[in-house]
Amino acid sequence: MKTFQAWELITPEKADVIRAIIGLAVAEGWTLAEFLDRVKPLFEPPAEDAATLGGGSLEPGD
Image (cartoon, rainbow, N blue to C red; front, side):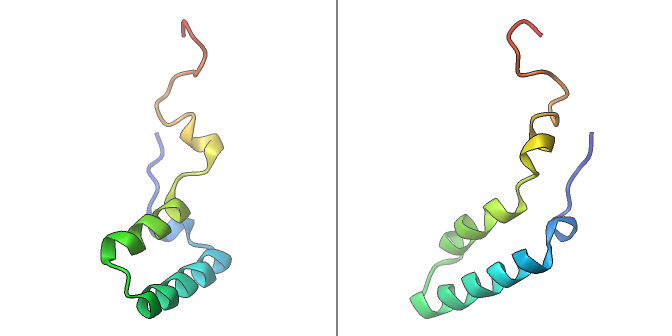
């Protein structure tokens, strides 16, 4: 099973998005929880990997 580290998932495009979210968070006065809710999806494993992280199939009976 592969574990994902946040820094492995940051692409230049995602870094730009994170910077924009930080700027918006400061301007809007978001709490840390609000900020993290918006940034967390950027660090989710890719969909094709997420389905296999449990090691099983999504099919019934497997």
